[in-house]
Length: 275
Image 1 (cartoon, rainbow, N blue to C red):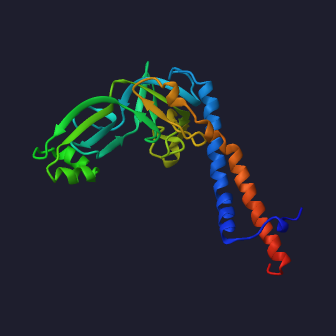
Image 2 (cartoon, rainbow, N blue to C red):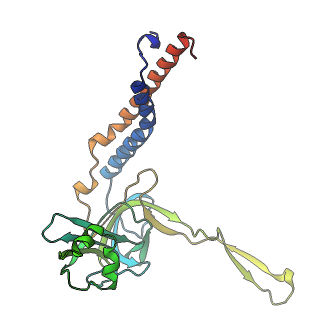
């Protein structure tokens, strides 16, 4: 059947066809990622960090800091915190988060969580009501710059209710993500220069040693999933909505439909001598 007999070109139809072609690829990619995640979740079990880990894993251990960070209310060392700011007497609510790379340590072994993305869940650590006339302190005042609505209401005499939660140093945490062995980026090989005992330039011996590798945890390029929490993941935390997996079918159908429409438009224009 000739496409030109089925397709009646319109501006709206052309726009929809182009949109379908453009949207098809990311919809298919997301659907494929969701299907892969669902498959990995079905086989997921907690594993010790000491094992040779690779791929999608669930590990647990204590939080070890890579850089200094302290909670804004309780001043406790942490790898990440969330400060929820509510304006008393109004529905205004804002949240401020800071996250850092950190280590998960277990039995002398460790893995670096080398990403600040993904889903993070924190332990409640402190609460405080900040009256409009009370000085917040330098650190808290700087953080509140990230909550403009709350600052506006505070300037008009409203109190703020602050709720702090954090991933505290030394506490148990669980991480679900993609494990890989990484090497330092600065040098591909460690270069060691050793003198042989004389000052002659040609007596320098080059010793090439393989670089040290370490275990990194992150979202992974193909799965794009990272879960960090103070508690083991529940079924709801590792659930993939079924509608997302439909993208593996919807994406190609959209792209094919858009291409067929554009092909029909091209055939119609050719038959009219305009192409």
